[in-house]
Every structure is written in C-alpha cells, then in structure tokens.
Amino acid sequence: MINDKLVEQPKRISVYTIQIIFFFIASICVGIGIYEIIPLNHVLGQSFHVNQQQVVLIGSTFSLGYAVGFLIFGYLANYIETKKLLTVGLLLLMVSTFVTGFATTYTLMMILRTIQGIFAASFAPLGFSIIIKIFPDNKRVAGISAVTTGFVMAGILGQLYGSLVISLYPWANVFWLQSLIYAVIIILMVFLVPKTGKASTKTTKTNFSAQLAKLLINKSLLPCYIITVTLLFSFVGMYTVMGVFFQKSFGFDSQKILWIRGIGIIGMIGSMIFVKLSSKLGIVNILSLGLICASISVLIIGISNHVILSIVMSIIFVFGITVSLPMIVSLIGVRAGKQGGNAMTLYTFVLFIGATIGPIICNHIMDTSGSYSLTFIFLAIVLGISFFVSLMARRTYKIS
View 1 (cartoon, one colour):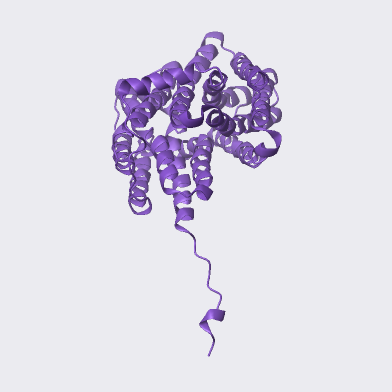
View 2: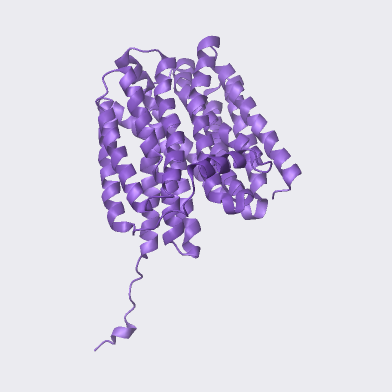
C-alpha cells in the first residue's frame, strides 16, 4: 500500500495568481477600446460621409471621455464600495459599447464614443484600488504591473482587433463583439474579485479638486506631467497617420498595414524585458532612453523614404513609448509619496488629454501641409522636448 504522504501533490495555482491573470486580461479588453477606432477611420469616414479630420475626432472624443471619467470615478471611489462601483461602471460600458454599434449619424457616434470613454475609465482607478486592498504586499506589485502591462499591450492589440474584425464583418460588429467580451469580464469579476471597502477616507469635492491642482503645480511632479502628456499624444497620433502613410507612400494594402500594426508587438515585448533593468539602471535613465529612442525613430521615419527602415523604426518607436510609460508611473509614485493615489488619477487624466489632442493635431498638420514627413518630424520634436525635460528633472531633483 503506497503511503499517501509520499505521493507528491500537484502545486495549486493560488487565488492571487488567478486574480492577477484576470486583471491582466480585463485591462487588455478595456484598453482596446481606446485603439480599435484607429483602423476604422477610413470605413467610418465612408459610412458617415465625413472627411479624415472629422473622423479622427471620433477617437479623440473617447480619449476625452476617458480622461474626464477617470476623475469622476476616482472621486466617487471615496464614497461608494469599490467592487460595486466597478461593476456598475463595466455594466454601463457594456451597454454603451453595444449601443455604439447602432450609431447612424456622425454626431450620434461622437456622443456614444464619449459616453463609452467615460465608463471605460472606471476600470483602471478602481482596479488599482481593489488590488491594493485585497493583495498582500508580495503580490501587489505583480497585480499593478498586470493592469499596466495590459493597457500597454492594448495599444497594439486594439488596432489588430479593429483591423481583423472589419476585414471580416461590418464595422458595427467591432462594438457588438466587444460588448460580449465585457459581459464575460463582468461575470468573471463577480466570482473572482471579493468585496472591498471604500477606496479611501471621505473627502470633499473641493479638497479633491484642490489636491489635484496642487499636484499639478508641484515642482517635482510638473516635469513628470509634461512628459506624460506627450506619450499617448505621440503614440496615438503616430498610428493615426501611419496607416495612411504606408498606404500612400509604399502602396500597402489593408493586410500589409495590419501586419505593420502587429509587428509593433516586438518593440512592446522588448520594452517589458528592458523595464526589469530599472533597479540597476535607474528610473529616469530608462525614461530618458525611451524618449530619445521614440524621438529619433519617428524622425527617421519622417526623413527617410525606405520601407524596411520605416518598419524597423516603427518597432523602436513602440519600444520607446512603452518603456517610458511604466517609468513615468514609477517616477510619479516616488515623487508623490502619500498623495500617490491622487497623483495617479491626475496622471491618467493628463495622459488621455494627450491621447485626445494628439491625433487631431497630427491629422491637421498632415491635411494642411500635405506632408507625412512634417507630421513625423513634429512628433520627433515633441518627444525631443520631453527627453530634455527628463534630463532637467534628473539634474534638478536628483531622481535616480
């Protein structure tokens, strides 16, 4: 008879590991809503009979709604139980996403995308709050990294998702399928995420606004927010123009452009590996490296007319932006101290203000000048300014 104690028991996956995987997948699913619209621009322009400048606003309204929604849900989390508020936010996101697929006019589409953005903003602040409350210290960093990484990956996966669906079905299916995905996320959350208390102690609306304003003008945080506004400004702006650039300059069809969008994942994976060196190289050093890589790569795309070189530079551009995002988050966390929660709320607001105006300005430059090169050079200058701001931050505040 075999002694049961000698039989090696298989290792169980911990509850926290399952929850981390859930938050990672959920953050990708919510994050793709920001970027799925980029490959839909041409189709939506034809459907609503509007020009490129107008159709770009559809994506920008989502980002604006997201920025505002982040402030709203960050404030409400002081008064309402976190899991309950997140459940309501995701339910409203599911409904608004489904309804967006029925938009029949350009104006209605703009309104619905704004509403969608507001409710999509519920996930990140409330998700972070839940992770901080329910995870032990040794799992908390992994949980926060899962959400951050998921949103970063959504930058490429969202474009692939939009491109793939419209290659097979009408554009409305992008939103209908996504609403179904949200329904699955909500069901999983009900079973996997325990109830939590309020995100923090009560605070008045005046104090909340005053605290954000004080953080924005804080001398050690201001350089961080200047850099923050340029990141998604450049990322969304670049990818908004890039599809048309490869089509007009090199004659790429929709399948090749889909491949170009997907190959950016190489840069994203590289950045995730490189970020692990932050403890050795220093947060600001890696931030500066990411910004200069993004600036130089988009500059080379602007001044070169070589297809292979442009593709390689697009990978390095993605690397530069995605390696900068977690570094600026870490930097803000270090500088904000006890005000870390409010500082992150302000960070996301500033980040998505950049995502709102980036594609508008880039598309305007392209339309008025008729030059893709000028648009890419402009983005290189914007990121170059951020690079010099990062150097000033290190020298002035001695941040390592």
